[in-house]
Length: 226
View 1 (cartoon, one colour):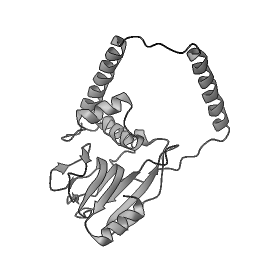
View 2 (cartoon, rainbow, N blue to C red):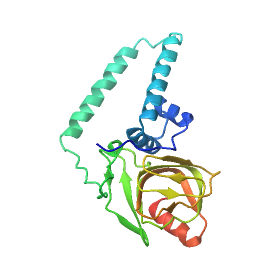
View 3 (tube, rainbow, N blue to C red):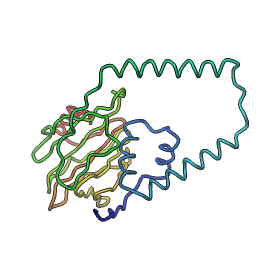
View 4 (tube, rainbow, N blue to C red):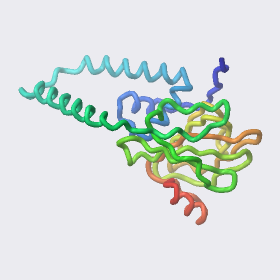
C-alpha cells in the first residue's frame, strides 16, 4: 500500500462550494474531482458542504408548483430513458489513455473521457487533449514535462486549474508535488519549472485562455487551445 501523499495545496472553500452545489463548469469540475480522489481532507470538506446545503434546502419555504409539474417530470424521465436506450444500441468506445509512468494513476474522474496520444509540444514537453463526452466546450488536457524543463511565462485571461498527478514543479510562488492543486487567474504571472529527478504530469482545465509572454509561445499555445 502506497503511503499517503503529503498534500500542501488545496482548492479554496469557494471552489469546493461551487463543486458541492453543482455550479462548477465541467472542465474545472473534473480537475477538482481528480484532487478529491487524492485528498481525504477535501473529500470530507465537500461532504460537509453538501450536507449543509441539504439542511439549508430543507429550511426553505415550500414553493408553489405548477399543476402539471409531476406529469412534466415523468415525461422528462421517459424521454431520458428513451435517449439512453437509443444511445446504448451503439456502445461508445473510449480509447485507452496515454501511457503514464509507474506510480502515476489515470484519474477516475476522467473515466469515460477520451484522450489523444502524447503529442510533441516542445523539447522535453508533451501534451494530450482530453475530450469530455457531450461537453465540447470543456478545455481539459494533460501536460507531461521533463525534468528541468519549463513552460513559458504566462498569465491568464480566465481561470486555470492544475492538479499534479506525478512529479514536482516550482512556479516562483510555491513548490507543487503529487496531489497538490493550483488555481491561477489574471492576478497570477508565473513560469512552472519541473524539478530535477523526475518528469511532471498534470491534468489541467482552462476557462478562458492563457496569455504567454513570447510570440512563439503564444503561437504554440494557440495550437493546443491554451
